[in-house]
Length: 212
Ligand SMILES: [Zn+2]
Image (cartoon, rainbow, N blue to C red; front, side, top):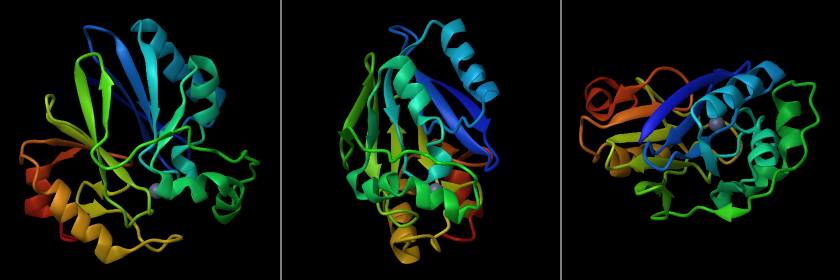
């Protein structure tokens, strides 16, 4: 599976396009585009590579990861996929915008397809395994691609850091326990693509992440 990383909006969210190079079936993960320029950038990439978007996946529903939800939904006809424990965040998008001091009026976002622990998302013959790792938000998930050896961690795990747990319904010990049980047990060479900042590997985080 191929991976393209974009960094969008004032929060520096990593939006990923994943695709299977045989079928060209693709997924957009965490659409953070907030401006027309950012929308154009991702649309142009999808078009140039002839990709067919078949999934719109959210690692969680904090507003910075969802600014571009409507753009992807409307342009490619894909449904919003996320863990149901974050549905309250999708409904409270306006309140989230206010909390971050943003002069925006986002519409509430509802989850069309519920992603739960153990679910599989297919792109051609390749698959992404859904693992729930709550604590940053109650519905945070990570997406593991075993054949390709990478994992998208959203705001669960960053290079030498972990997700903040001081937001609504955060839980620090739950987050650390989940990372230890579900992420640090992956093969050490697994590449970690986080929701903010540079990529890393599971092995590097076992050695260098002071939060774990
Ligand atoms: Zn977040």
